[in-house]
Length: 298
Image 1 (cartoon, rainbow, N blue to C red):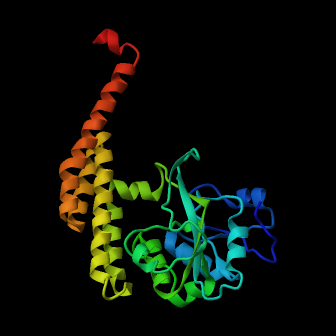
Image 2 (cartoon, helix red, strand yellow):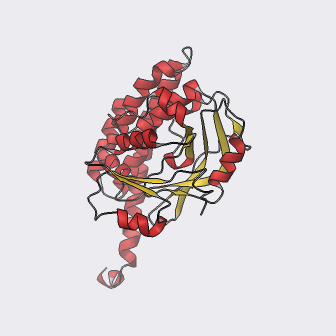
Image 3 (tube, helix red, strand yellow):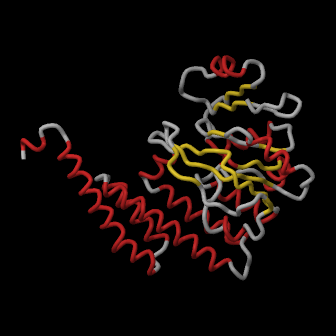
């Protein structure tokens, strides 16, 4: 519905050798001849597929969407208006929402600034925490080409890419929520969280991007990044304990402490995780009481 026409926008589905039935008829039914379709001859992985999209792109700006993400009305028009004449800008992104499989909004990303514009010193923010989702960002094609595309050897390659872009180019920000990233039980992110692969990848990303950070601030920023990754992992561990997912809780806690063992992280381990476990036990007890026949059995 946001398509301005074939002269302005190339739309293509790049299928990474999906194991589902042939998806091309679905693309044809929804998009007709307007949407191109490419099926990789074999599965090459998410970020190699992203790089394939960049190689096939013909326009000035590239917007890569996961198959389950969303852009809201006005995304392309708003960014097009903002970026006209901004030749120095390498990328632009908007505030985004996180939604579940039922389109229910779970949370929204942090507001970077109240008005639209270039983000000064953004390398110090993006270097500490992953703040951008693919659905919310457009990148100039020549920027991707000059920086070499996405790394293909770990899952945090998108965070690493945004840091690379911020280290070399100004980035534009739109404060309106115009995109959504979907989190659900069957996503790669969920599977990676169960195995604590998210912490391992983020720790590796922090080490890889340190040379891109301001030299006089690199050690401090890297330390903050490791601490935030550890605190987030302990939060995930606490939630997992509350749901009796003990393997996930153990793996997240172990990798959190390998990433950072600052006083703040130790305090979180000693207080936050047991509190979440206790709260989970209380919730389960109330749920048991609400089940039919629970009171009569007691």
